[in-house]
Length: 194
Figure 1 (cartoon, rainbow, N blue to C red):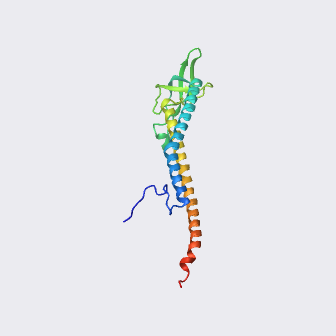
Figure 2: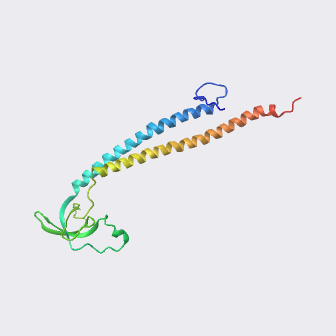
Figure 3: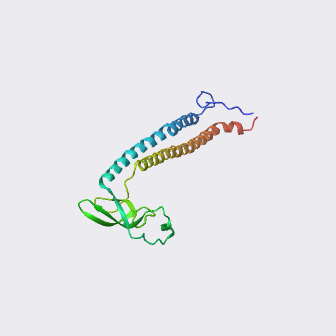
């Protein structure tokens, strides 16, 4: 039968080695780093990413404008299997009326499945080029959560790799310590008795 003693590395006893104390403290530090510091790193990185993404989205909303345009002509022929996917937007010629400038025509990204004569929302930048719509709040939050999770996972990975390295070093020191002890006590065990 095997008896397990809890906290034996923390209590004073004649069999406790210095490496046991170091390992006990290391386990405590690793536990705190994994369950307190890594999540805090993730939250901090996520909040920072959210602020930056929100500022970028606001900047893009200020630089881009949406027009309600009508698709002119039929969509282009789709040839590759990737282009057959109806979820992906494609480029088509669109026409819209701009106040003070009259009717305008341009090539722009239109939603998948748009047909000739159908009104579609189209985004343009300040130079008149067709661009993606600015990210909405859901995209900003999705980016922030992804960055936060990656940062927390990266911090946890660094902690666990550090723990593996520490265990290797501790094992090497423990084996060296055992070798020194055996060098002192081994001759007493191996000498013939008279």
